[in-house]
Image 1: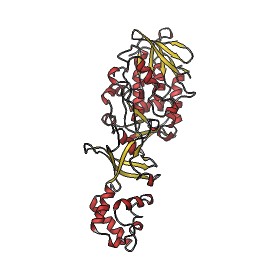
Image 2: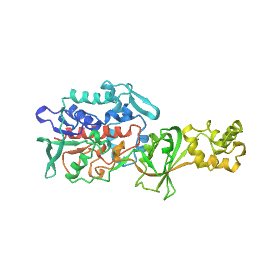
Image 3: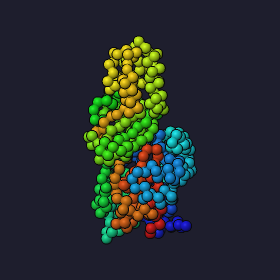
Image 4: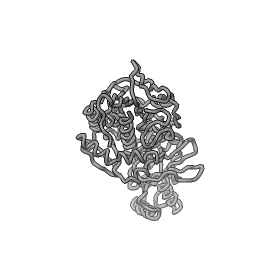
Length: 420
């Protein structure tokens, strides 16, 4: 068991970045007796955290160990020690102990009962202040190291001496919140390799104008598949909610799908939506026959109100190849079969991701081969630790990315605090 240091021999730790990982790291290290200074360039802490989950903040996912790692497509093994040390259960206890009651919703997603992300930020700040963590609203420019050992940091105004540094500056998504990739530069300056930085959990631009004709329409309980046109393989397959926009597709299903797509380019990927996922083709055909009987003397375009949302009808009619003004009682079996095929396999060619500043997270970062997974310490610079999105790990939506931030931060803090 680690024994708290006295003030005289306490580790002097700089935590760079006042987001989810930074505040957790600062709170945990200070709790263990370290003299912690948290540096945040913004005038207030947790700017990005305040807008996560549409302002509700999905703090973690209360699922099994295996399910947690099934939701981490990039470098999951690297996180085994961190998650074992500080799991979803620990995150829940942390916030409830700080006075924020939590609730578990569909898909094991955990939110504050208040549905206010600001309460999560306040709890982290409360823990920092209770443990006498000093907070400075200064921008760190450089991390100072000599002979492979941390010496301190340099801000816009002065230099500070520190024994250890925990770098928690996030990625490059939502740059207006301060996540502009500054941490990648600082890590690179110290010799670390930064893997390719690409958007993840990001809306997708269509190759064409199908979606723009239906913009604003949300679909629930549909099945989305992403097909790699080059290999012919389905690389993503799930049920849920998506939305058509002026540029293409967004929504929870689409954001999760984007994490599976590498090197997106024109012609490489197609989104396929099963608009009637609860019905097999035979049952759907029977449903259409029933609707056509009900609208026996109507034009085709006026017979689909019970089957489709209004915003989709014109697009579906156009793609079906059936004359919009054809009476439904004269539609052939072959035409009906083509309509069933279209509804079960509604295809949208994809072009590219939206800009990285619209991504929820970034994929890529400090190469995990250069970080000790049991401590989060750099293998290149003694006394340098990493936590959160700056590391080359990422997950799907559902609270998994915030849990990664909390787990890596807690492990980094514990090891930094007892390193002196």
